[in-house]
Image (cartoon, rainbow, N blue to C red):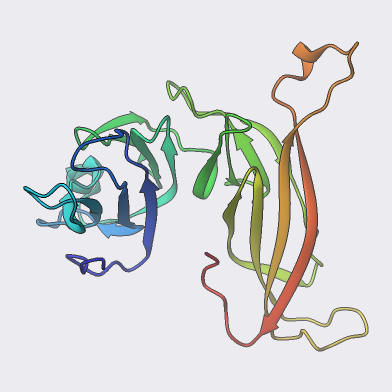
Length: 264
C-alpha cells in the first residue's frame, strides 16, 4: 500500500522510473509525483515527492513503499520569480531512466539526476511538447503532443545541448469548425509505438442539420500507431532519415454536460 503524500497536489503529474540496478535494497522502481503548478518562494515546498519500493532495512525478503521529499526545481527559490505561480508545461524521462526533464513556462528547461537528486538548468528554451512525452524504444525517439499545433509529434531527446527539433508530426483528427478546443490534448502510451490521443472540445453552435451536440463537452479518443518509414531498396535512405509513419486507427466520441479531465 502506498503511503500518503506529504502534501496534496493541486494538479499532479507522475513518472515511473524502473530501477537502474538489478540488485540492492532499491530494486522495485520509483514513482515520482510533482505538482504541475507551484508558488515560488515558499519554504518547505513539497512540490516534488517520490514513492520508492524497497526492502525493509535488515530484511532480504520484505518490501514496502516509502516516501521521500525531493528538492523542487531551482526556479522555485529564484528571486527573479518570487511570488509567482510557475507551471510545468511538459516533462519526460530521459536516457535509461537516469534523468527527469521538465520545461517550466516562462523559465526554461531543467533536468534532475535521479542518482544524486540534483537539478541542472539546460537553458531558457522549452521542450517542443505539451504534457507528458513518452520514449519509444522501437524508434529510439520520444513521442508527444506538439506545443504549437497540438499534433502528435516525435523528437530526439538523447542530446539536450540545445532545444530539440520535431522530426515528424501527424494530425489524426480534423475537428469541425464549430468545435472549440477547451484544453490541451493528452497522450496515453499503450506500448510498442501505439498510443491513444484524447482531444477535448466544446460545441456552442449547430453542426449541420443536427443539434444534439450543441452546448456539449466533447472528448474524442483516437488510436494511433507510430512506425519507422519503409524505404525502397534502391532509395536514398540518408535523405529521409528520421521520417516516420503515423497511422490513425479507430476513434470514439463522448459528449455530455460534464468534462473528462484526464485519460489514464
